[in-house]
Image (cartoon, rainbow, N blue to C red; front, side, top):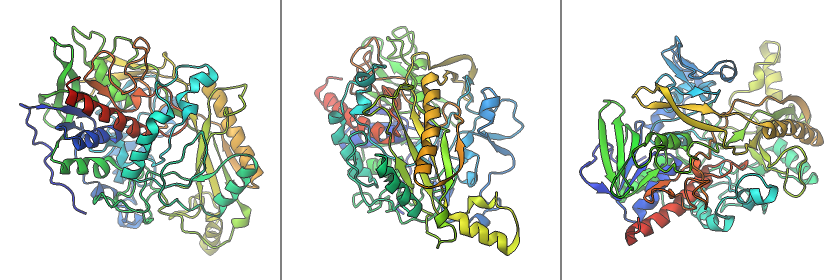
Length: 594
C-alpha cells in the first residue's frame, strides 16, 4: 500500500500557520482534513511517533508464528482489572517491570499493540482509581478503537429538558445530522437501517451478517419491543473510491485480538482516513514527537498566539505560531493542556473564566452483562465468525417513553457469539484427548454474551486538576483525578444485569453467568465533558461551534466539549462536531473575524 513520504520533522517554526492542531486522533485528524480542504495552512502536532501500523499489528500472523504466541516480553506488564480496584494511582510506581501498560494490554495479542499505548511509567497520574487508556502515536486510539460508530439523537441533545437533570446541548440533531452524513460518506460505515428515533440511522454500507444465535436473539427482542441490530461499525465494507489508503473489509480474521486494530485499514483510523489525504493537499505540515505543554497568548490581544511543545525524544522546547489553535488531544489531555496554559491574562488556565475546565466529567459505565448457551446450536456446523468487525448492538430501551423510577437515562449492550479462531470454552472444558477436542468444537459456536454501556451523568464534582507534585517523564505536571460513580450509575448497573438475564431467558438462552460488578471508572475509554459547550459562558467553556468563550481563536474539538455522555459510543459524534466547527472556523478566518 502506498503511503505518503514521511516529512514529519520538516517544520518551519518561523512562519505563522493558519491553524495549529494538537493531537492526531479522531478529532485532530478530522480538523486537519477539513481545514486543509479549505486551503488553510495547518500544522498538526502529535506527541507520539509515527508508527508503521502494518508492521505493528501483523494481523495475518498466526499465533504459533510469534515467539510468545502474541504475548509481550517478560519485562513488560499489563495492569489487570483487579489492580485498579486494590491499588491507587500512579499504578506503575514501584513496579519491578521495565514497562507497565494499561488494562487493554491484558490479554492475547498484547505484543502487537505495546508500541501504540503509553508506558505508564512515563505517564503517571494520581487521585482516585481510574483506568486511563492512552495511545501516543500518529492516529492515537483510532489505531485500536472498538469501531462502534453510533449517532446521538435529540433524546441525548435535549435530555435535560426530558428529565430535568443537567444541561441541554446548545445544538439539536438537525444541526449535526448533515455532518454525520459527511462522516459516513467520507469514512464509511457498516450497518442496517432500523428507523429508531433514539438511534438515528447512518448512510450505511453493507451490514455485518448476524449468525444463527444472534438472529434468534433479534427475533425474540422484537416480541419485547426491543432491537438487536448488526454492529454499526466504522468500517468500509463496500470500499471507498476516493481513498487509496484504505481497503474494504474482507474478514481477514484478527478483529477479535485483544486491543484490536486493522492493518488493511478497512476500519477507520485517522492516519489513512484523514491525515494522509490531507497531506496530499500540500496544506498540511505534520510534526510528530511534539508534546504540547502550553497554549501561548498574545498579551496585547488576549488571543492564542500558538503553542509551546517539547520534543519527545530530545527534551528540547520549541514554539510554533498560528492564527488559530485547535485542541484535539483527547478529553483529559485537552483539559490538562488548558489548565497548564496559565498566564497573567488567564491565571486559572486558558479559556477557564467559568471555572468549568476539567469539571463535568462523564463517560460510560461497564461491567454488568450476561453469558449464555444456545443449546440447539451444540454440535451444529461451524460458522465463520472470525474477521467480523463486530457482532450486534442492542440499543437503549429505558427512559424513552416510560420513566424508570430508580434512575435517569439509559444503556445499551454490545454482544456477540459464534466460532472464533480460538474457542474460549477450551479453558473451562474438562477432559483431554479426542473426546475433549470434540466437546470443545461442538460447543464453540453455541455461546453468546453481551455487556452493557450505561450513561454516566455529568457532575461538577467529578473533575481533574493538575497535581502540584507529580510530573511525567518530560517534567509536565500530571493530572489528579477526583472521579467516582454515583447512585444513579449504581442503580442503572443493577438494572443492566437484571434486564440482560431477562432478555436471554426470554430468548430461550441458558444463562451461564450474570456479571453485576461495575468496572473501574474510565474502563470504557469514553471520557467526555471536561470543557463542555453551552450558550452561557458562566456554565460552559466553549460555544456550539467549540470556540472558547474567552479566547475566540481557541477551539476544543474533541470529546471534552460533550455536555452529556448519552450511552452511545462517541467517536462518530466527535468527528461530526469537529467537521461542523472547522467549516465555520475556515469561513471566519477568511473573513478576518478570528
